[in-house]
Length: 431
Ligand SMILES: Cc1ncc(COP(=O)(O)O)c(C=O)c1O
Image (cartoon, rainbow, N blue to C red):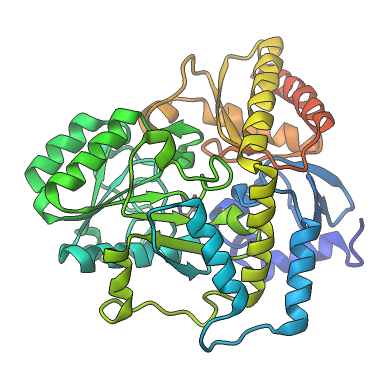
């Protein structure tokens, strides 16, 4: 699959029109290995402008769960295009069906609000929590990512022990004062903080599996402590399942933990690559949207995303995709672990749901950001660059994950494990 355009020219133009030649820091990191201009994506593969085929384990930060450009999803979008692009008035038929399907997966919630991105879903969830409690403070945990906006862009890569740190310039001090960052998986510190400050807290937000530091599931007692603190102090618990829903569970992580949250956020693979996320919540909270809390968005509930999303989610349910991905990722993780052992490189492969991460130089799975950061990130970067040159696309960022999709075959896993063994040996030899 070659692009009609000259690859060198494309890259030059990309660097001219986009800062760093891509949308945002994380996508830019891929150019650090060598410029990457993608011209096609299908199944488990993407193709670059030179016509090179890459076996993809990045999968758009995990948003692709069925495989790239799934034919049923694409057909639903094309069919919808025949009917409309955007109505912007009232509601569309497919929007209703899609919301009903989401609600059927997460019983206990009565309403849905669609947004175009996970970041927007988090923003409105925090606004709802503040409105419901008439309080300002949001508690988040280090190593947890809840989108790029001002309200939670703190300590994603910086341990809480170092102090509260914005991960970007430009966040107003006033906004910063409404966020409290605590260490993940640390029930003791959470209880201590809440007993002192609980009366000011509007919500505790957490990733049930902290995929923003690789693969770090929450401890059950930590999630239970968050629930208890919310009950005791009258604040809301928000599960950010934007990465975990579908990929790790099609019924929500509340079942895994036996803990309910007033609000759950979903996104990414609910539409297998189309831009849609959603807020699901209990009636008492969501009813504020009637007249007290404003939500909007010209493109919210976009008919093309709704049609593609409905096709993607109903297919995922039919295939029991969470179980399929769990099995594939577990198999891939153990193949990768033995390939690394054969290469003589020390590493821990941590698997959960439809993803796994490699932590070089660790002998145990990390349970916190501080532990995850002890892994050898520069070895990982060299390793990821070598994988790329062997035709395997993974994130060059050591805190990201390897994702599996329905389209990945047994042969794809063999290709991965062979490449992993070679890449680890080569990275080791370079010292
Ligand atoms: C857990 C989590 N929350 C929120 C977001 C933000 O979603 P989006 O990138 O769609 O704005 C992400 C994206 O990576 C995420 O992983």
